[in-house]
Length: 195
Image (cartoon, rainbow, N blue to C red; front, side, top):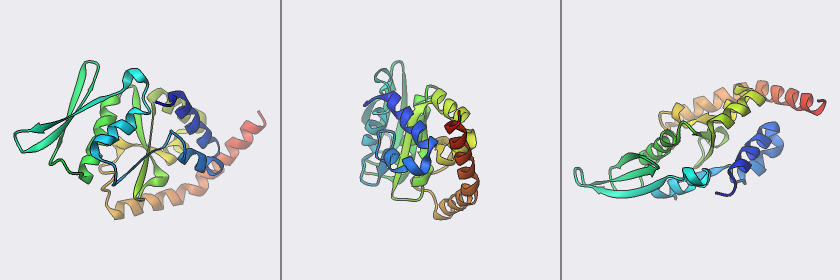
């Protein structure tokens, strides 16, 4: 982990001026990039980099004798969670299962959110913060602003394998809200400037 609290500050800095800080956010440790080239077991490693040391999740891959598949077992402290796979090869459905299962596993302390600007691309960006930190950001910038950019992964049926028409629908909804969202952001920036 390269500094959990710096992740919060990177997200905070981004939300303060999304257009001005978009590039630096995308290049920061707050952005966890996942694409087709990443193996299932590596997703846990990438996510662990955003957790505090005592919260790091161990993983184990075991052969499942019942259906000739494999299971990933997440472990931390006194709890564990089994994620079944159809086979050892990379499967888009399994990526969704890992992301959502990891999110479920690290709750109630943390939450994984999808960076909505990445939706529909070949690389998706995720950010992990403590739930209390997401709440602080929603209080500071408004829940509508935060959720315009960062949506909890539990709200999606599919993430990596999302149908094109659903991605298009979400993109259109975001585009329709864009002017309103950025008007609020500019007003907040002005207000903070004169405080």
